[in-house]
Image (cartoon, rainbow, N blue to C red; front, side, top):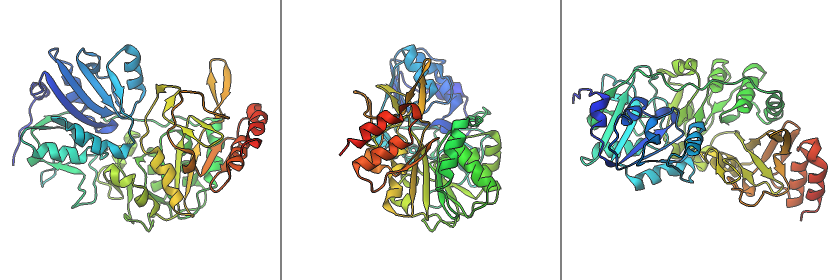
Length: 432
């Protein structure tokens, strides 16, 4: 089947005044199409479902437009502060798929590469939770599948035939063209605290470990150490593929002899990083993109040899309850794969799960401890205490798995900032 591209204006004209649209997380978002939505002012009730906006889209500031988000970033936080109609849906990344199927937006929209010789358009930097709903929309005559094809995106692969990581021209209802630059996420230089944390975390990564890393200076620094220090034979099984993981590949340290279901490949569900990363990913068979319900499955994660996961937190209490996506009652980010990758290594003794955070945070002119005796009323737990294995600050690593309530609390107090340690140790010693 041959389908001719239409203008973004023509595609936007197909949106009803009362309608529902689903878009992927972050790098999968069709930026030209979403920007084009703002050229109209006649919406009566438009709901757009997505997560982690990567651009300022004027559409979300318009009356009668509602954004339902599964993961906040800086843009969502700014829109909330501006009074836009933005609401958070508590859900981990794996559950986005069933939730989206339940919502069944009339319009599904995504970016993709131009088609190959067989008519398949690679979904490029994002598989996530929208793949199946894209196919369902394309197969339903009462729904629309909008694809914004962009030659500047890397052509990436899944694991065909079941998980091709592509849509076919035959499925597409509206094809639009774009040459927008993909979202770029630069790595900031690590702070001294992040370097210290990374040094403690590095000790838990042994030859042959399979790695999951998230965003930020700590995982990037850990991967940098692995790239330059002795050791190797690493594998990669990570929700997010980063510039740091590219450097680890280039160092020759990744063999992906993981012993799991996808031996021989680094698997991920989305990628975000530098232009260098995107150029490297283009037609690169070493990295395969799979739907999030597979990548973040605890059973699949635990099948990898010597799994080591690195994740962050905003605060932890002496019981080991983790706050990772909120500050007080304010939504800050999202749940994502936090609990999946913190909990899955607990299914195998050789696996390790590391939650890394600085010991303090700044509030105005003063410092507060991120390790607290008890979480304040109204704070929201992301990951429960029984999932934790290792917590790392710049003052060391606390190994919690198998410890009693008091032993775990004393271990956590022992890696807190010295200004708060005596008080926390006194509280911990009283716990039973």
